[in-house]
Image (cartoon, rainbow, N blue to C red):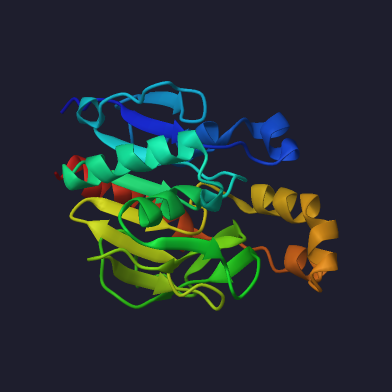
Length: 239
């Protein structure tokens, strides 16, 4: 069965070490889907686009992470929020990753703020609290790779909490019939996670964290990596 392409909305760039070695966030997402998606991709940089392409042209929309903050309320952020709110209302398949997760939360009536529990970085354990096709309760421990300072602190109306972490009570959310957000990075592998910790080592030290310990704790995150596959299988293929 032929499918339209997936749209990857690019909202930022990974740390320099990752970008130089592996490419941008869109390349990481494509890599995470290489074994399960053959419908093609279209990449659009939401920061630079004057208008975003109609969501109905695509099998689904994946919104990347970013070092930007939703709290900045820049014009491109507002424009992208409106686009995503309309896509969710029209029941298009949407997955927001990290910053994309936060964009969805804010766009649909929630609130994004600096995480009151502080920066979350490294390989962390996900606590799955609701059954959902995006997450697999059978994988224990459910490890994911995370790096963020902001968080969805107030849920939008109708959102369901799917999973939490020690520092984030809204680590995975379902926003609608075919719309999800995850605060972690399913497109990261261990090497990318290590590059983030190494890049942020000085900041982590200033915040009282131990970069060496975070590096030593990096582990394969099968539960996190599975999210991209599940989004295609349950959000896109069986729509």
